[in-house]
Length: 313
Length: 280
Image 1: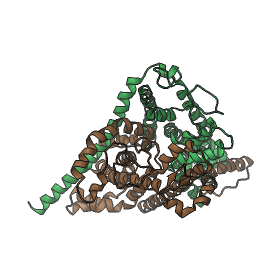
Image 2 (image 1 turned 60 degrees about the horizontal axis):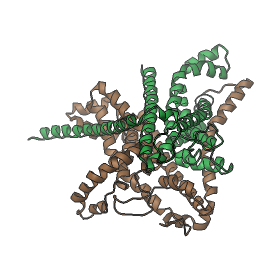
Image 3 (image 1 turned 135 degrees about the horizontal axis):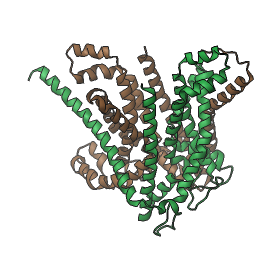
Image 4 (image 1 turned 120 degrees about the vertical axis):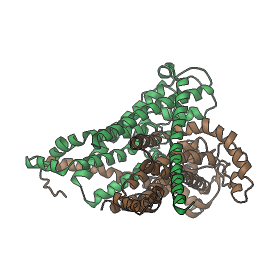
């Protein structure tokens, strides 16, 4: 570590400037927390913290607001999108590391990263104009006919399949978060020492057995970190979900119903908020989302750091 | 069928499933890009770039104000964000290398990269829009800069760390002060990497809509004043796609097509340069 004498005045100046620049990150985080807190003070004073989080009201006319409906929407879309995305992403990582011929590894890796580069508003538009009609005409009625009568799962598929609902939103969100888990998993899989895999092959294991019993347990931390990172990203997605979720504040048991997430509510209602308490409640929602995302991303980073430490032995 | 055959079949089946997964991923990519291509090219014409929007429901018109506005906002965001990011990354990789504060800022920066961009929009609204009393382009540019800074900072830090310490030692041995070592030796060595990081951050920020929704807002008219609401391509696509007019939908597709082409070219170019330069 360099302990260099900084007697040179230009060095002192340059190091101070760069130090201030790097501290901007800390300033942003503290600034965001402070601003969000002070702006939601009105709402916190009127509704209290616990009752705001558990209230299902969202009534601008009666000036009664609660975060329960939007938190529900956020969690449900995130949960189902992860449910769909994780197997696909890990499957892609296994394909790229084990199955694909060498010349395909680069292009397929690049293709998956392109999925991450596409702006979320493109996902939203495509979802609204292409995917929703397909969902409403073919997929959702089919799911309703085949799974609608199954005792517990059937409840998920009640209601009129309009295409603008939790189901479509979850699917679009899952496509968006596949690249994050896939590339981190692929990197983790590549870090398995070849000697460990070779000893498994020497014992007569099949390729899948090596993946299941050697590679996956070894890269647990990395894969988990990738999953939690996808979770953090999914929590904050706005535009992809805004087009196809319906923005209806309700808690529902059917995936074919419209709902609202915190991000979509902010996007649609922020500029429409006419009263101070309305705006303050929206800031309150933003604060809740920021705290949840921050903690989730911190956990993800923790896993990824542990994985890095474990693998660079 | 003995156990060995069963295990072999299980392996083939599992690997087949992983191929299906890869196919699914590629399928979505081709589906989405293909759709944008088909719908976008259909609606692409020269008036899109030369004319301002027509009144709602009236045929014709273009998105000149949105293209110009988007370029202006991105330009100012880059001017604000990139220097701060590069200087910050320099501090973490050079003056503070190995210290715990550098590790902390690095971790916080990684978290900031993935923080919801709409929350950043609300933050900037509270400090740059509410006090001024009106939406303005500067707020939009600053919001995008806040998103860019962590990205540029992290890539700069990574690229600078890749330059071997011995190169710096050689410069020190010649009597150079640290700042000269950084600016004339280390930056030169990491230039490709840092520049690529900047390009990738521009690609990321060009597609952002949420932070602009309540900072630069949108403008139906042509304006180059950053002190007022200014049109942006992304918010216009949002407005037009949600609108009821077919002409609006067509223009939204064309704008999305231009946006996607721009961002994909930047991303592919950036990643190709990184691979060429750093995987020798």
